[in-house]
Length: 211
Image (cartoon, rainbow, N blue to C red; front, side):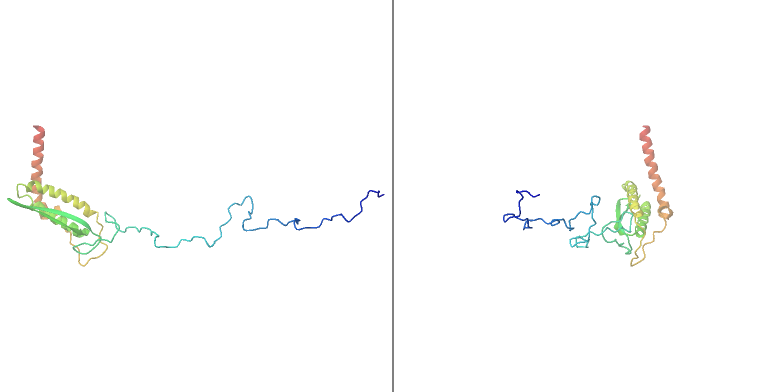
């Protein structure tokens, strides 16, 4: 039974009404937004194309890839292909061929230098080398100068052999290299004084070694 101390609802009872600061359930529940993390195992979301994505655009400072050189054999790189000064064919290279003429009292040193293709350079070398083997011995100093000139021309021959065959036609046909030096009459005749000089040098060396 209800006793005497049962409190009945009176004027001072304050009923709990929802106020301005009442937190309704689910008011601050995190809504899915742009920063929501999908899961613990997925840490690298795919990058979607956005307004700040940098696409490779060719600009004035873009460095083009270097093109492969179509010509080898010691040809100059970085620039236009050189043309032969004699026929205009290419490629060509700088070549220097020397010659010598001994004339008893006086002597004369010759030189042909220029940018030449392989056939023109080879023709120049064979002509100068063959003429030197015949005309270069007839003088006191020429006996020493002629072998030196022949040896120097061997260095020019190695440069000529590194020049590729012409791939660009010129304004005229290139020089005909002709036969090799020792298949020409000048080369065959020049073997006689050359062998004499070599024989004298060998005898001098053997004499100095024996004495």
